[in-house]
Amino acid sequence: MKIAYFPDFYPDELVYSVAARYIDHLQFPSQIAGTRNLFGKHTKGASIDFPYGLQNLLDEMPPHHAYSIDGIIQKFTLYPYYAPFLHVSKAQFIYEQMKWSGIGIYSAAGTSNSNIIRPRWLRYCPVCVESERKLLGECYWHRLHQIAGVIICPIHHVYLEDCQLGAAYMVHPHLPCSAITIL
Image (cartoon, rainbow, N blue to C red; front, side, top):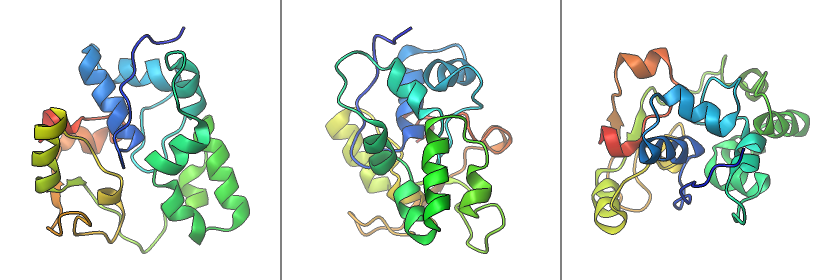
């Protein structure tokens, strides 16, 4: 069953973020219900860096949308930032798994046993938040702000701040929390 409404992606927005905005806009009874509506009934939720079930998301979008799997993966996930550092076969495996079940993505990416410290919390630029609220009426999670090693907003040149979502986020990190409700 196709959904009748899906918000457009904002520039540099994470799939995780647009899923959270969708859930907020439609006031789903739970985040799990909203993510399963978008990504398939067997999904745990929307991952911040390598979301999966993207083919289901594309299939569920309203008719005449302008998105493709390649466009979503390249513009709204962290995949293009990891792929150049991976063997071609692992990068292709991750790409394919993002379309479907997501099985083995993190071991293929090497993030589960890496010395690179990934951000513990979602991060945001306070200037981006303020300007987005004025311009768009809402704010969102930027993918550039979530990349390991990035500590300054490349647009506003201010330090990124941690959004400490609390214990619920750490227990269920794949359940999307919108920037609108947190910041």
